[in-house]
Length: 151
Image (cartoon, rainbow, N blue to C red):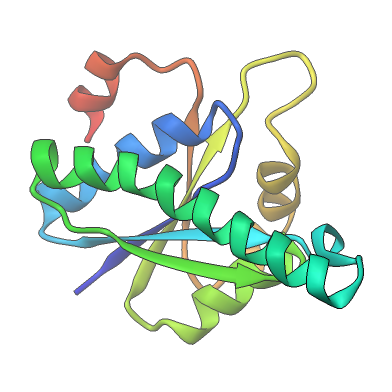
């Protein structure tokens, strides 16, 4: 089964990327894999404190994921999977793409403010020609109706 890999983070543009991935998966018989990356610098504390912070970060991710997962299951009939990795986001995204042969498309949300589309979109679009999967970039301000029409 072809899966759409979408990155879960705290950005506003993440919402439309999630919607797009779920809708495309529902219309094409595919699946959704949701990747969240915990940066290593969050745990550069004493060992005990670092472990507590790691557990809290995972719990926040799982709660955030469950909001999207419920919508995907209830509205799109898609049961997404959650993957949590620790490390540098770019490296972990690429590692996930390389390790999971079912991933067919990487879906990213692009910010609509004047600061640019975001660091992941900027970095990955520069490497687009060398990636093993296509990238779909979903604008943050695309309406739900427009998303439905194009998926």
